[in-house]
Length: 230
Image (cartoon, rainbow, N blue to C red; front, side, top):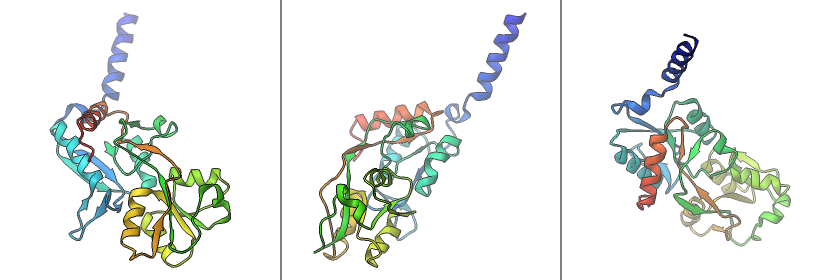
């Protein structure tokens, strides 16, 4: 009887911890991204969140045969929301790290890229090894913030890349340190005022997934392996 009671207790706990989102195919997938980094993720003139990150998210939803709800979020809120179970997955140039993997699961990398500096043309080229002597901007709670801190730099931290770009425009910082793709986009739109440095780091970006959603993780890996990360 004790054994049966123990089994019943285990079954009850399993039922309580089972995530209903996995079994209920009628539930839409909730996807998070910070829509401030064109061309990866941004809000268009119609107010719709679009970009290459959103395209990849939609391919994953199609793979699973699920509807998709796209939600914008501050970068600092993305992983906590996945951990809390209020969203299913996120794509927002999230670097795969061991520390982050304790809270969320990561797909295989869908993109290999790195970080560089955006700075004013005609000024000395910033280097990570010499960043301690510069006024450098970084996005809050990112690996770029960590890289700068490791090199003795106390960066000016921004909630979004747009805020950092405006500070650089106003000459409040000497450079902005971030992923190369959106910084190249900013340089291209600057009319020649800004340029980017060579890559200072090399890292993989993954789809971050709620640990209770192995089905989403499997679909993300399948889409990426099929060449869906474009």
